[in-house]
Structure formats: structure tokens, C-alpha cells
View (cartoon, one colour):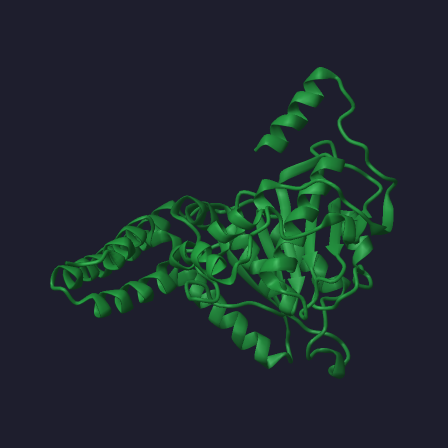
Length: 348
């Protein structure tokens, strides 16, 4: 929010808005600006379940480690940046790409498609599947968005996160936890269900925004059977959690041996972006009814934990609360944290 306000103030004052580089591909880009959204504390709040995040100070104290403000030293990082030549009046769109490979590169054939949609593309080096998700891949993507937004005029309604394979799974987590940054996600051959210990739900305000305004495009090769099943499982999970703006696209290529597990070609990317950039279709009545079922289940399970506590069954209460934390994540807070403190209190 502060970043957006600063840009508006600069525009109103007549000051130079941004210091953009020339259009085209720029490699070995370095960024300098940090964001509070990429801090360790904020990422823990958004990306971990409440009970897990609450345990971090104790774990660090036991290990005599200190949690730094930011997980990334930007001076040591490099990015690739692709900027279309034509900037639309409302500002560029942006696709922050999380790769499965270690190098920062633009997939073959993507540049003309990005040009047609006026989408800037940015990706980080050393952010592949062998890199730590929470310590590197997620903060690198957040810092990429933050710094591109500082350089260029962006349309906030067209800022997306995407990825291929393992990078798509990271992109999905970021879209879920940061719906105030990313309008949606392009999930190319990689996805997971949500509402479990691996992909916990964020807090109520953030998750409501994700349900209401995020669009997800699942893009999978016709012969990539493993990822097709993962996509089906993920989309089913989304709908169970009242996330309805999800779209499935199957990539059918001319050559048989190229359909197993490759990043989207230009044609598939074009179709995916056409869908991703369409106006949202609100489903307020359907969403309200679906949310009601979740709230009733959550309330009943939290009440059951309180009953176990009242009956002195602390071990059973702890196990039940852990199960709620894994399934409902931030939706169960702050009540889940209050119950945890009650269970941890010494009894005389």
C-alpha cells in the first residue's frame, strides 16, 4: 500500500515517476529495494499455520539462532527482466515467474506473447527446485515484484505470479498467501491441494480476498498424466474451499514426444493468458453458501477442543487442535492460538 501511495504522490507532484530501463531482455539485473512483505516475520504470518508460526521464537531460542529481518541479501542476487516495447496507458501487467531450473531465463517463444499482452516478465536466478522454498524462492519472487513495481508503472489488476513444475507449486502458495499483491496465478504443470500442513490457509482477511478476486489457470500437457491428476486434485480442493475462479487448460502439441512434461509453448501461453486476463466473474451467492459450511465445521471443531480442555483431556485437546491448525490454518486464528495457550498453561 505504501508503495502504491508513493507512486501516486510522485505522479501528482510532477516528479519523475520511475527510472525504467530500455525495453527488451535485461540479464544479470540486480535490485536494491526490500519490502516488508518479504520479511521473515511477514512470510511466517502468511505462509505458515498459526500454531507453527507461534513456535518459531521458541525453536530459535533453543538453537541460539536469530531470525534476520529479511531472508535475502539482494546484493548477491541476479534476475532476468523482459519488458515489452509498448507501455499501455494504464500501466504494464507483470508476470513474476518461479522456475524449476537454477538459471534466470525467459522460456523460448514467450516474448512475442508477453508483448501482445503488455506483460513484463521477471524471474530470479538460483530459485529452482533445489533452492529452499521459504528462505529463497518465495522471498525472491516477492522482491522481484516489489522492485519491478518501483521501476515501472504497473496496473495492479494485472500483476500475476506463475511458474513451471515445482515453480508452479511455489507460485500457487504465493498467490494464496499474497492475494493483495498477485491478482492470480499461472500454474504450468504443477499444483497442490490447499488446506493442509504443506499449504496452509492464510488469515481470514487474506483468504477472503483470495476467494473473491484471484484467478487460477491450470496449464498441463495432455500426456503429463501425473500432473493432470495433481491439477485435478488441486482444483477439487480449491472448490471445496470456495475458490471458484479456476480454469483448466490442456496442452496438445503436434509431436507426441513433447507432451509429457515441458513448459508451455507460445500457443499454450497465449491461450492461458487470454483466460487469465479476462474480467472476474463474481459468484457472491455461491461463495456465501460455501463459506457458511466451512464456518459451521470450524466452529464445531473448535468447540470440541474446548470441551476436551474442560474435561482435563489435554493430550486429546492438543491433538484435535493440531488437526484444526493443519486443515483450517489462519481461518482458525485467533481462537486456535487462545486454545493453545490454555492447553499450555500449567495446571495445579
